[in-house]
Length: 409
Image (cartoon, rainbow, N blue to C red; front, top):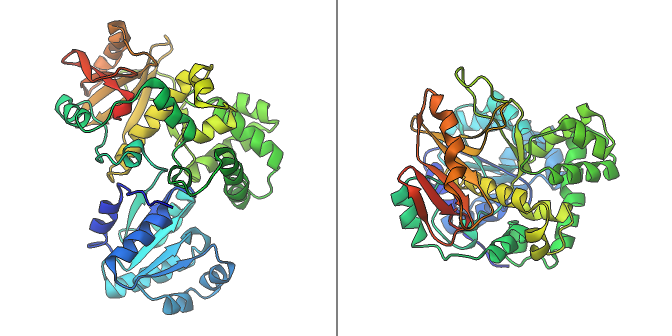
């Protein structure tokens, strides 16, 4: 199986020179362990590897964490550390005594549940990183650059990335970005996703919420996938899955905790009072969305009723990954008000708001940028906006409104 270089490698190595502990979170099968074991082999420091998926190791870590750390002395890589939060106190003691950079590399696939243990025991002692499934820039071996509407940066990027056609882009959307599939480690996309859902997702949901009706859960996650890139409607999803709204909210929180979905919250301030408050929902992996919503091929997905939603989900998740992989916090929002004026994505940074509209067209119309003016009332300055679309090259309407091909992101 071919190893695909991850953009986060440099972040881990840099942080490991100054932080005694690094915690890498993210969904299962995203490549966390593979990357860290690759880096451990390269550093040649004799770093031990232990996985708490091993029930014997987990039992020792939970019942006698002190003995566990005596047997597995730093430098050590501890996989799926969320299974033994009892370790955190003893890692803290070791860190406070020794202060050796890079002693502990930790991974976990339950993000927010893990944070609680980290905040209680390891605050100020651990560097936190989040890894998603592969970004397109990782797959094609392009540079790690957080997405920006800075024209000079985009020009530089456009010279290094090979353009792709709309059918080729939808093939990427349909295939997904799980390392096991992209690297050729697993044959059979449908079998991979079927196994992924039953082996990992259902099991982790059960672990976090107790008993789970497998059939209802599959109905639920399918209903969520059918509403990718849309405003979250707990009632509609609950009705489709034959569950109550409280369970629906809990399960969406769990999918977020497991790093499978993320929510984009609306941009709002004291001036823009007519904005709605409901978040929009996206998957990190569009291949899983296509599998759940039963699009049988890239061609069918491209011509189907969800093609616009799939393109938007793909684009937003790639923007999100571009920030995460650079170790930066992504300040992404969307805008929608009660007058139905909408902006797909707003990037907040450096005192500016940069509005983005995502369209499945190769020839966008200037009228698409009219909505951008609604955030002009914001206390922050209106930055350069862009239409992200299927154009074959980077261009612009004017200096403040760019036309950016999705294949560049």
